[in-house]
Length: 273
Image (cartoon, rainbow, N blue to C red; front, side):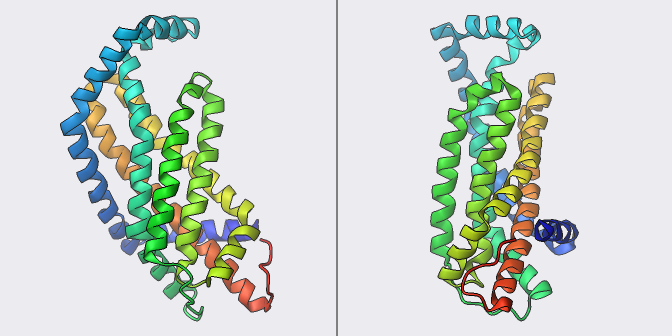
């Protein structure tokens, strides 16, 4: 796992370079425009719809009973905001990942390759269309699975593990493709992603733990005051962009290092990490 640790250290250094910080502004602005507009237009209707849904089906009584059993009775007035957050989080994560994959990853790939791997031959085994396709398909599956796991929040440790696994899967799938699209051939990319699936998944899962922080901050602030809800949504969008930026750098350094070692060895199959 030395290659994983080395890539992490390089990504951490690159994360705070002026170029990378400036790069985070574009997906951030896209996220702010998207979620600012959606929350302004549909935030209150979403709360009203959830309020009516809970009242119609008697879910307030059920949730009050569950929270009281868990010793969390003071949270019963926050059931609707919490549900709104749980519904919006996968969509926010999915949109941030999509913006990063389509907008930022090509720039990250260029930055890393010029600075660290200038002699690595480009074989263009991926494409913009392929990147958009794998991003869209992955985030749709991710969002659907996230919503299916919402009930697991009744058992927080299990929920955290499941969310980290989901994050690991989606980021390893999306960012590995984008990281190798420019330099690896199609065969090299597929072989590397297969041979290094566990290190790539590990990078994704560690990033998944980091990715839980914006949601925790958003939910915690909303519990304190509903006035903070839209502001914390914006803060969460920014944090997601920064986390995805770091994750993209981590994948980029790891994948290009693996590709360089593969070609340097003259092997026909990838070397394990």
